[in-house]
Length: 211
Image (cartoon, rainbow, N blue to C red; front, top):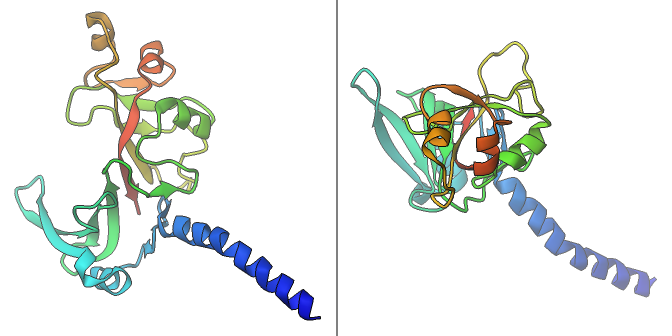
């Protein structure tokens, strides 16, 4: 009996690293439209302070299209896991509308393992098919606008908006001639099966989770 208890204790100790890894990965888990870490659809700024600590939560504002400043919240400011949170109720700082992260090497990952640095080809594999992005070289360049009914597409069929928006950029090391550059630039929709895009294989530099 004594030996069995010792063996059981050793087994539990051996599982601790695995449990730690699992809990740590859940800490940074993003489920589009549902949660970002412990942030959910009904979370408020006050909740963030209680969950993550006051030192990790900063009030900020951004300039809206009409020239008005709107409140927002920054979580983990000036770190690789910094989040920008725009609220549905901006006055009372409640209910996230969009959460954006863009820092290199961020720990945040979606439930299907999409993160900063994921490549176009990896996204196609996860999605199970090609998707559509906007051409490069302008304000919304490289933005994914349609998952083309793939596995990454929003599961709520009643909603037309995406709940996961990603923006792609490509390395300066990718050399394109003038005609190639023209083909993938500007305000136009491009399927990712495009040979030039396949050659470029751009990576995600910004992820937006929509609630």
